Length: 276
Image (cartoon, rainbow, N blue to C red):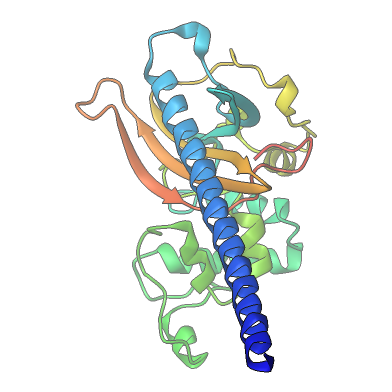
């Protein structure tokens, strides 16, 4: 009788353990489904705005100044923002003054600005001669780093991380203002982030809130755009994506994806009242 009782207890414990494992597996599977749904919705949002920008329907023009807006995909809401690359500072083409203003927009002190600007210029120029306050190949080696300056164009803004004088905190602030895709020495203030406009002009520009985003604002149908998308899959599951896309209706390829990030480099959706 005692043996039978022990067997019953053992079987009960095994059944309870199996039940817990099955419950855990079910929750994990449900979570994966929700994550997949969120990512699929975010990706669908990017595809949706690309198709709208390619369409010949002028009533559906989208804001390309970083304003946050929403679209509906079936019964789900996807949060979106688009930034024309000409409203960002091109690391390969920007003048020293524009680079300096960008750093000031990130809160860099004037005493540090020249050093940072020269370090960026030394990374992108083709020679190994350091600017007055810059750093070149010898300085990287002297610091014991296993790399030197590129001595060529930035291929991605992530290369800023390899410049010793740019720490992680500064990089996190810079990514909202820079690109490698506009190929312009200046920027289009119509599409620039408010903080960058303030640093360049002294004018304080209030970002457009999601509810106030103008779906009919002016936006070129050809060019390069940073597109941000975020969607929820349920139970707190959120997916956020960033794509850099060139739109060209006159080309054999109407659009080309230049970069794809998950999650985006910048916080998205942004905090209430902010633009991307």
